[in-house]
Amino acid sequence: MAANRAEIAVRIMRAATEMNAGTVAIYCHEDRYSQHRLGADRSYKLEKAVETATPISTYLDIKQIIQIAKDAKVDAIHPGYGFLSENADFAAACSEAGIAFVGPTVDNLNTFADKTSARAAAIAAGVPVVPGSDGAMNNAEEVTAFVEEIGLPVILKASMGGGGKGMRVVRKMEDLVSLFNEASSEALASFGDGSVFIERYVDRPRHIEVQIIGDGTGNVVHLWERDCSVQRRHQKVVEMAPAFTLPDDLRAQLHKYALDLTSAAKYKNAGTVEFLIDDQLRPYFIEVNPRIQVEHTVTEEV
Image 1: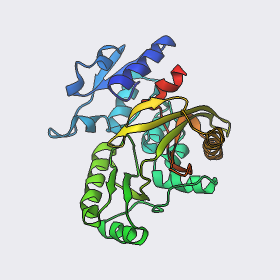
Image 2 (image 1 turned 180 degrees about the vertical axis):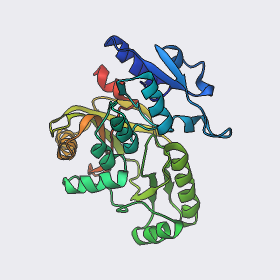
Image 3 (image 1 turned 30 degrees about the vertical axis):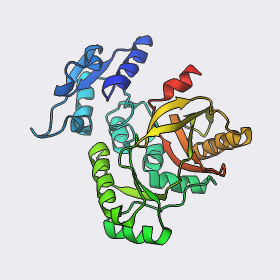
């Protein structure tokens, strides 16, 4: 089963078909004519919990998705990216139902899906991080006190999820509270979790990500890196592999940091370790995406 929609669901089912495996799609009413539904061997409609629920909410309904999987007698669920792909509760629910979760382990997700715990793991592994809060900020008062201490500019980030959702750059104190509320609301709507943390904003950095694959026992390999510095509203627009003009010693250092961090966590399956490089060529870890990414196809071409 592809527990997702659109492009990534089509990719998952295409790969399954190439392995001679049957495919199951799920879809909401608004996606009833979508390619991912029509291209599956079987498809099942997701029902909204209430009439006014959003289409997105149906793809976040763990209980309903697991029940459909049971009814369809699926052997494995691939979560794709976004939605429930980084949700440890979903991975655990798959395991409890006797269904393989095609992704990292529950422990991996508990460590890396939450960017604040990922920061802690990076620090423990000796990987440099951007200065910021140790955990999520719970309210406007906490946010204000913290920013008054470290100074501006800062960036507010959703603790869960990615794709530029729940991110806001703050350059003026008078904008802080409203932008915090915006980031939290967007994170809640996108990922079902409104927690937000704070980092010092690195202005005009290079954004380099290292592709890794692990076997779950501590053996991890890298598949080199991608440069995703060309972005709009914190969403990647152009990806290049390998990263051009990156000094070889810095490239090797990034690969080592990525392997050190994920090997220590006994990472399983595909993942991406992301870094910012400032104008002094200093690298900073920012997150691990414990899932497949949109830009995996760039590495696959290389």
